[in-house]
Image (cartoon, rainbow, N blue to C red; front, side):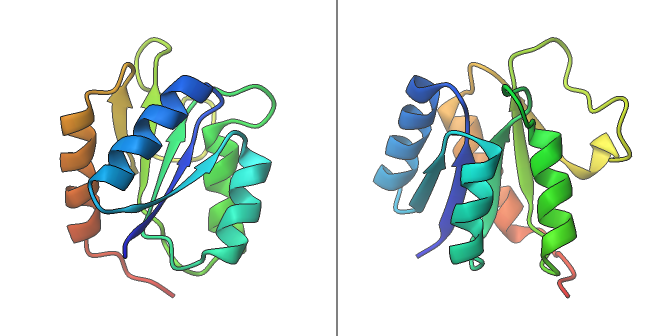
Length: 126
């Protein structure tokens, strides 16, 4: 079963995405914060995709990407959700074109299509 880690500090959004993914046959792993996400990922390194909110209190989606890239040799596809202005990761050393951005509120059908697309990408791991 394909595992997808979902990180969002807004509980209703997190629950909606988790429910949709579960109904669609994925094993959805919910996390309300970056630290929780890192703990979950350490026990589920076979996760296929990470969906993360960009802006969260404390550590952000960018912090999550940095930590995951630092800790793991595997390259995880990230889907970044944002409800704050234009999708951007200005002010950091990540290239926006390497990530998929979806505007909140997220269209569930678009999210599911984006997951399928992410699973087909040819990532060079290791």
